[in-house]
Image (cartoon, rainbow, N blue to C red):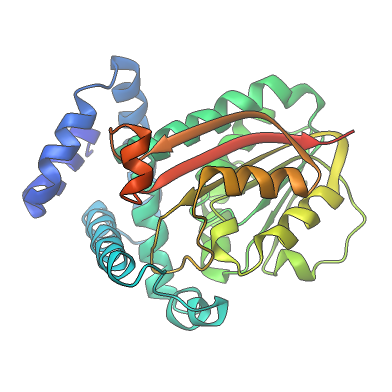
Length: 305
């Protein structure tokens, strides 16, 4: 069975340009991190095998994702805008392509442990769940993608909860559903909907809502945040994440600053209870802003009273 160290070695062998940054990042990680990463690698390897996919495929998917991001970054630095013009282009080039979307989601799953910012956002999410799990009877995830957050939520909260996953991509939704099935997390209280969240007319309120890395995928993220506010229970919490200056093959909305994100959250009627501001490079924030280096952002939010 492959372990995390072998994944890193394979990536460095196939892409020497990543070696220095990966080794530098991993040199700061704890023993607990590597134990967790090995557990993820073992579990995810078994899951991929059940889907007829090898870990070699996963590594290649990760490297393709990195290459695509570099191309998008070059375009961004030259043109000062993201490569995609609108959501329709994202559908045509990514979401409607099973092969493209599956590769992207599998590669993104590996980034949970290979990228420090993604790992810290995942930790932010996992630390927030235990603090709220006793009162969570209804859980909604918008855009579950690779399914790792949805899986963790079910494992943490347990069976005494109604779970709902909504994703505009059928490929992503199928990945999430297959992960739930493989790890035998299924119960009668899990529902999957292949729909645009904005098109769902519901009066149901949710105790905990997750919307990880979704806002930057839509043309008007403020409308999506308003929708989130309308379906969050009075004492509910939501976990959201997004990013600044982070062009990729399917990002549409360009957040230019952390302040812009924070203002949009507050203007939609939310309080920011806890947040993480995570630049992808270890530089002074002044340099990060000046050079337009990507910044990941996550927050636990609640409705304003």
